[in-house]
Image 1 (cartoon, rainbow, N blue to C red):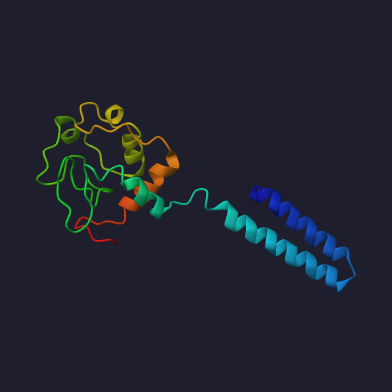
Image 2 (spheres, rainbow, N blue to C red):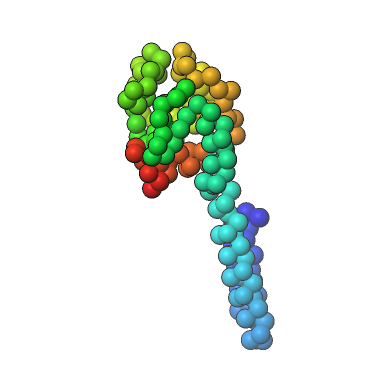
Length: 156
């Protein structure tokens, strides 16, 4: 139920209780209001929250070519430690495509989402062969998982 409707129900319950002379009814109305507002707060946020555990499951799509963590090394793709805030084509020792070296942007949530949705559309000429992740929630979850790793691969 949308939050604004829950607020209306809570307001109506408080109004009814104010006109009641029965103290028990007033208490029940206040309890109902508090319950509705609590439910609104709890139910309203998870839909947009990032789920690191789900991101870790999504990471399984990436791990065939990329590594994370303190022992990570470049393989088919570059190490993804400290990805967010890094320039494209910047991992030392990895042989990037000219497209990636010259892309000239810094990885942030928007750039990552656009790239992982369709890598070849975002960066024509990239070596990355991946169909992409189309689900916005999955992309956000994967980003949350990746953000846990600093440049040295330590979980923050």
